[in-house]
Image (cartoon, rainbow, N blue to C red):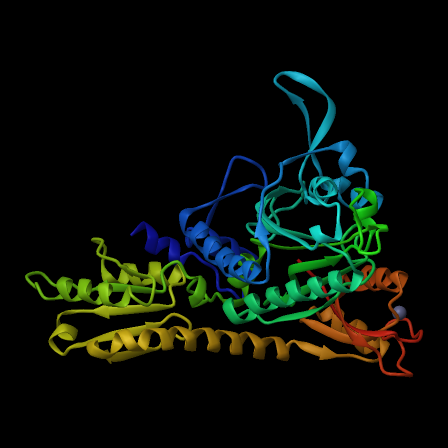
Length: 477
Ligand SMILES: [Zn+2]
């Protein structure tokens, strides 16, 4: 009964998104708080979800020629400071190791906030000739950024992510790589996680410290804030000059290479929880749900037909889906609430009457719809149902985003829209850093991505100077 009471204590999503979010993370048993400030424990269910998301990205990285490798957690300060903008951007968030084995270190070591410095250093040793290029390496690891306020998945001191680091002979090739990886991020977000995103270049203020250009995918959350869900950076020769990554080109000349990096973290889990969840809890996209189908047997005293039928059904469905037969002692109603809280896409209820009629009841988590399906058809129906759930989750999220994206051309309209904090505001913009800072000071919103060039003659929606681009504005996580 403990669990049932907990389930009821979740506030409606629309009333208090922040509290709803925290409760879902905990009650769905994805994470728990720990005695370490700002650091969460990822519980087995949360880790299973992360592993499935990881697998979707990893498969695509490998299919585009990347290999995984691993680099040290600790980065000597002398390496970190080599790229001036980079260190300036990250310095406030770096945690330092100053002692080891009871002794003060002669040089302090950063716990990696990101790995350009150490990976760049290794690349300078590994690359000599144009024949060594491109280098296409990805690392799955933890990083640490000393944040003040924290929230599960969205902002934690230590988090899991992947960081790809590549080296190319030409700027064009590096630029192509950055777009290729950004497109993979979009594909996984939209086609796997059912999370619609906008894709584009970041403004100068919002780009990664040390990058020539940063591109990102951004999702819109139910409170109208944007969530940056993946970034891909062109470094030009900034890092190859700082870390001495050179190669002898075909023309026998020694040149600085062009590097990129791109990353996605477990933050994207926070995005899918907020975008898809409802008052009953989590709603997981089928492709990454640790259990895609849960079978709940309704066993009456004396009945001996249900459990064997449920086991046969589990074995049959296991060939095409991740299936859990919940044969614990709790009541069916208790199990329904628990699996709804934990976001399982499909629930199959099977009782004595169902067995007698050769049928089961199938309940979709996203719509809470119930359908009777003949036992003989269920195995064939499950994959199609899972795909239909993904599509309908995506369509619902897209329609919501479309309803919360407005275009604003005039100053008052623009400022009022941003102050309403209702979603994306698409507007012509001058692209000046000072203008963006003024917008932020007045409305708390910044550009999320640049959508494209402005029309000739358009003026900035905020300051009235000539517009260079159209950009999406919003507050953000
Ligand atoms: Zn302006």
